[in-house]
Length: 152
Image: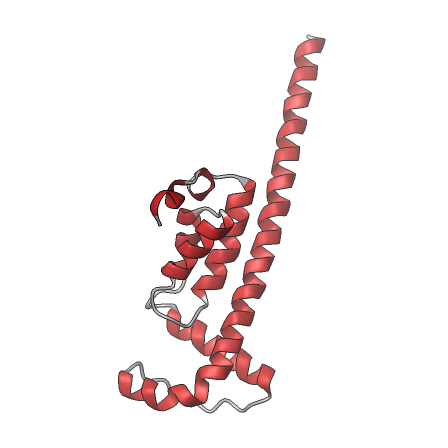
C-alpha cells in the first residue's frame, strides 16, 4: 500500500476516522471469510478510517465468538429468504463445511451482510452523535469556567 498507509486519518483519533472505523470494523467482523482484516484495512485506507480501531472491532469475531455469530446470521438470512434452517448440527470440520456450504452460503451471506451493515451503521451514527454531544458538553463546561473566572 506504500505511502497511503501513513495518512494521518488512518492512525489519529478524530470524529471522522473513528466513526468510519466502527462501521468498517463491525461490517467486516460479520463477513463469513478468513482474514477479515484484509478487506477492513483496504476499506480504511480507501475511506480514511482509523485502522487500529477498525481492526480491534474486527477481532470481535474470533474463534470463540465466530460459531454463534455465524449461526445467528445464517438463521437471520434463512428467515429473510423464507427458507427453513437446513442445518441441525454444526461440526467445525472441512468435511462438514464442504458438504453443507452449498446449502448455507446464500442465507449465511445475506444474514452476515445485513447484520454487519445494520450494526455498523448504528455504531457510525452513535459515535457521531456521542462525539457531537461530548464536544458540545465540553465547550459548555469551558464556557462556564471562563464566566466564573471573569466574575471573580
